[in-house]
Image (cartoon, rainbow, N blue to C red; front, side, top):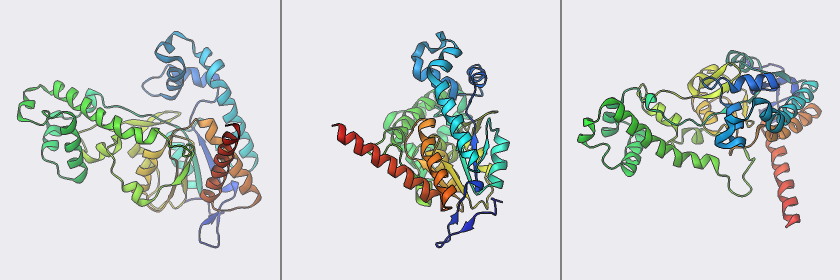
Length: 335
């Protein structure tokens, strides 16, 4: 159960102090960790994501020391500085967090902030567990999501669900299905990547209706076609990548605390947790931002809570809104 030290406020929400909070950092914070992660492509994605994002298609021609010294080292040091600052305020800070350690923190604290990398993952041919069965399910949908997927497939590949498709062997059919599903997902995922003016950095509390929204993302497709699509390992912990369902299962069904996922690109993960763990409060960052940038409002929020305990979500959103308003004002002054 979450930390019992937090007390209800006037409206019933828990008034949170730093001692009620845990900061779970899964990303590498040292040169040795970063370089080691670069050599583990099956289990780690964040370090390679940083390198490929900055180094382009030729990033493998550079050394790990180059990316640490010129790209990521400064960010890691800033994250470590924030960890030290909030720890002095009373937050329990855990670095290099393994999956089992995250689950333990959720059981102990009223507020858990996860600093992790989210990997947007395309379907590979081998992710289609049973191509003929998936093809049949698309031809005869049994749920609303399956019906929407059928329509989306037919819009992008009109002949895929025709009888003649079965002339393809299993591997050819799996390849065709994976490419078609990836095209559908690519369009959907742009909704989570492209911020409108003034929305970047916006923090929101996931509502039940948002959690139930069935956009054709990979997690939605995996849940709609159980056993036919392999779940993606998309959430990175220090001991490797985990699937959404594994992370959801790590949260107790009766958890009533706050899961703060604003420091990772967390919309899909946050919605999945809220859908299956209705009693908890889930905070997300609506659009992707850099990890170190997202930690600034967290640090300021913890400083405020150290002075005056208050509901965590309200405090974090107030700080974020103030920073966004100040940034917008300065931008307008420069124009």
